[in-house]
Amino acid sequence: MAASTPVAPAGGPVGKSPAPGPHDAGAPPRRRALLHRLDVRGAPYAFVAPFFIIFAAFSFYPLVYTSWISLHRVELATMNVMEWVAFDNYVALWEDERFWNAVGNTITLGVISTVPQLLMALGLAHLLNYRMRGSTFFRVAALTPYATSVGAAALVFTMLFERDFGMINWMLGLVGFDNVDFENNKWAAQIAISTIVIWRWTGYNALLYLAAMQAVPRERYEAAAIDGASRWQQFLTVTVPGIRSTIVFTIVLSTIGATQLFGEPLIFGQGPNGITGGADNQYQTLGLLLYEEGWKNYQMGRAATVAWVMFLLLVLVFVVQRVVRRAASRRSGPTRSTAS
Image (cartoon, rainbow, N blue to C red; front, side, top):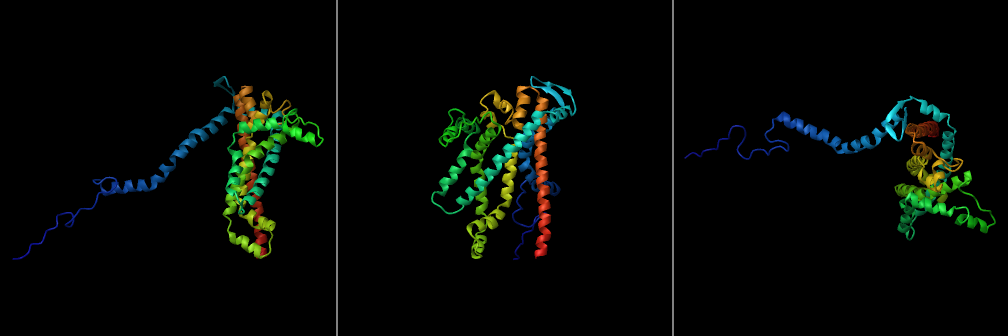
């Protein structure tokens, strides 16, 4: 008796049929291919879409709208009424002495707060980079000022720099100096405000430098030590070049922060003088000038103009920084090739 062999049904071999696709089992091959292509190519854009939506709503749109307001005469009480003035606000700002005074104060405050801050942060990070007892405690302590609110820090330092009963003047009196009027003296006020900024941001920048230092290979330090380099020479020839990108990053952050300096001088003024940066605008920054134009003089068009000038100044600083870096790299390029 001959054995019968099973006959394969039409459309495939005997056995289980292939599992349905992830999208639609009954979809034709072209549709499945299209859905697969959309899944592979469109999924990354879907994942990053929330960021761009939030950025467009809370950053890009306000930036564009502020530029539009800066071309109009707009008052705070009647924001829906705009009078087209073109670039008159920019011309008026260019001719305003308060603007140039605010630019000068912003630059000086930025220099005397940023340079010591970054140098101190670099030295502190270098010390924390070595193995020492309680290193975790010191790292947390370095970050504590950054976690403190700007209002609390400014109020405490305002009491310290008070003219008649402040601790700073009390300590100066112990060594024979007269009381210093930190609020009404231009340079004394700027030094006091810079002290607040230095105290708040030194630890934060130190931890950034520390993280970058720990990523520098130990072999470089060992090679430098074999060549007879001291700790100071290792710091200059190994550590600083190894964290150069982080140093540039902190300089950029500090420049942005100095341009937008607002809370410290406002609270330091202790009242109406805080908005104007002192009785003679001796420490008024661009941020305070923006606030004065918008919320004291109720001129939102002028305030928007100041905001856009601040943005353009930052762009100018970054362009100059890039040009200087490219020029320095071009100069060092031929030197290296010649030496090799």
